[in-house]
Length: 109
Length: 111
Image 1 (cartoon, rainbow over the protein chains, first blue to last red):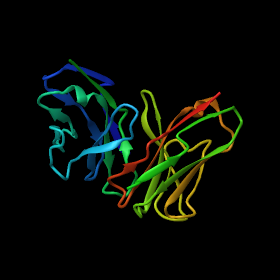
Image 2 (spheres, helix red, strand yellow; image 1 turned 45 degrees about the vertical axis):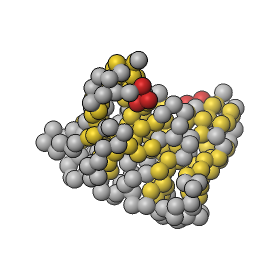
Image 3 (tube, rainbow over the protein chains, first blue to last red; image 1 turned 180 degrees about the horizontal axis):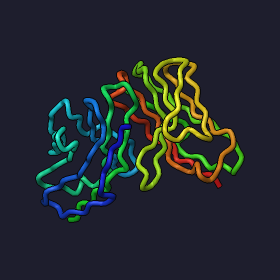
């Protein structure tokens, strides 16, 4: 069964500090991994997908198949990064997205 | 660019009442989903549809029914609301089952 684990419910960092939001998954095939973000009182929106290998708003994420991880990183946190972050997995579109429980990032000025 | 639109945005129900949440998408997506979001639980899939006229159960389907009579609409019904169904409900759609676009959410309180 597919499973996504985000071990931290809350992560607090100071502005300008590096950020790493952890995501581990369990899946036997070749998954597609995503990071979604939800700012206060807004809808979820896609932040990153691993196949794009892009940097959005300074965030990057690398799929590590050996460690089954897809951690989200940013070198210098900004206050506007404060939000709820969800890691999600799809098996190439054959089943709906499976989400982790989310990590709330709080960036302190 | 409407994207995914949910109706209503807020609702308060009494225990035992029924209601229908409407999700509409204008992107011609095949796949549509209903999730519920609860504190500490993340997003859990209630039901989903892979095309017009099809529906399937997700992780937490009990107490809910769905219908997909038209490709652009996906309805979520609560026949007899319970306080445990107090939640924020999100609808989403996608073209291939991967990247999903979400609605703005419906905040439902059952008293």
